[in-house]
Length: 378
Ligand SMILES: Cc1ncc(COP(=O)(O)O)c(C=O)c1O
Image (cartoon, rainbow, N blue to C red; front, side, top):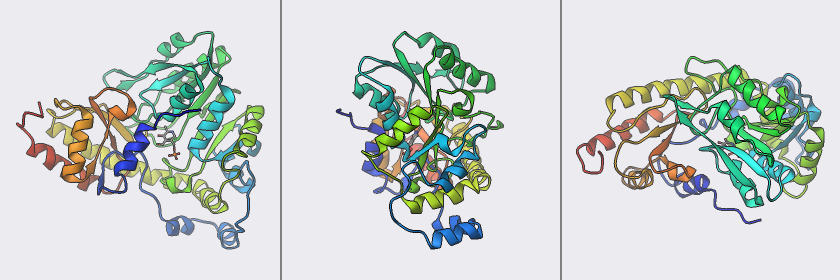
């Protein structure tokens, strides 16, 4: 299988560790190991200190899977396969899809969600974002996209990059659309729990609602622990999970016991960790709201409901990629342009999960104001 470059990841690879100010990250700041261990129970710390670094259970350690299962209503530790999030996505697509199948995926979307399917030879129908006036995905449109060869529906809520989250009725309609047609629903819930904007997270994971719902969650976004490379698939479709476990033999085989133990501690303290990240996101969102009011000529601001990002439209003449390239070279501020989402040339993603957001936004504002009146801007 030949895979196209992953444009978002390639763009990050170019600048993330070279430049000083990141304004588009989708993850929250990484928590320190010391902080995480300070949350561990005496039993967890004893386990950590005497940890043996051999191979681990391919499906994920029992301790970790027990901690994961407590975050679902109907899922037991046999309904889970642990792997890195990207690996889980890759495995699932390979297990479920064949050349000629049709897949429905949101647009814009994190590229791997549709790229692996495309590389297998599937046709991809895009469920496109609308403005209403904030970003919106209409469940009726999803239903209309289904054709006889549709084998998989891929959704991601809270959504990267728009921050859209369906309300309870809309979510039930989405799940029902998959169930009525007997189609597997792959629900990327990587930003689960990060819901703000006056809303509460009432979305029940897809795996708790539908026997062919497969939920993906992990440590990277909601917990600010991307370096642990821990994610998992949760589903009632045991046959599919058994196959995913067997597929993993050709990839990572098992996960690091170090990362699994730290992930267990994080999951057992999830409320506290996620609440801290939501607070930071809310503070940064408010700062961005004020920024946009002062600079209406520069961009709009469709408010996200959840997640850690927003997808704003630039009102300047320059294409987003050109603007982002100049910006990073002249100021060290990195923005992610919509060309990397294969979504036109007008948008950029803003990330709210970082502590230094106020400082970076301030530098950004100085930069764009310095350019006011410049022919590039309007
Ligand atoms: C929607 C979505 N799914 C999956 C992932 C992959 O997560 P990870 O980087 O931890 O592999 C990301 C990362 O940005 C994402 O935004």
